[in-house]
Image: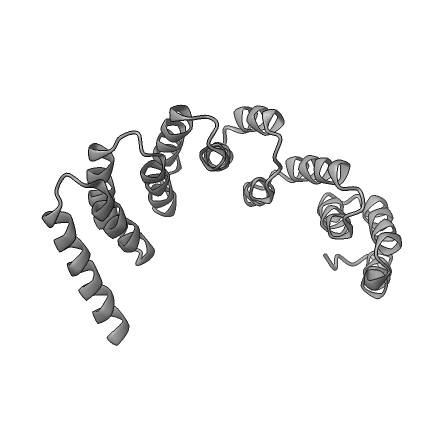
Length: 205
């Protein structure tokens, strides 16, 4: 197809740039990232590891390696790269986020919880990771923390209502929807419909 032909030409041109500047990690990072987005993970790793060898303290290269190993389904290797990126500079928020996410995906939730509690910034990616891991109680705890910080955010009330419903705590789900209704009248019909469904024994969220 035209699309795959263009992709291959781009890879060839990027690879030539790598060979033209063998001591510069940037071309290797670019071609590695591009190959990763094409799903050609093993080829991507060849270039990304070359970039990492040339610039071992560049966190963006390490985070790209995390992404590729995660896409390959090798969460433990991804975790090692994530920890290396985080340890290089713990003030870099993105490295912290990625490390925490990888801890969750790898099942190391105690360490993930510790780092989340130490962080001033909440990130919904943590919630999504816990949801993917089936840890709904952790999802609930994070939504509760979000609401504590932004009690007037009606969307958070819908989200926590869905979480309560997933846990079978129907009365609490209804209570949160009633709160959302009072916080934002524009959501009243949606909230009322959901409450009606929950009271009828269904799971609309």
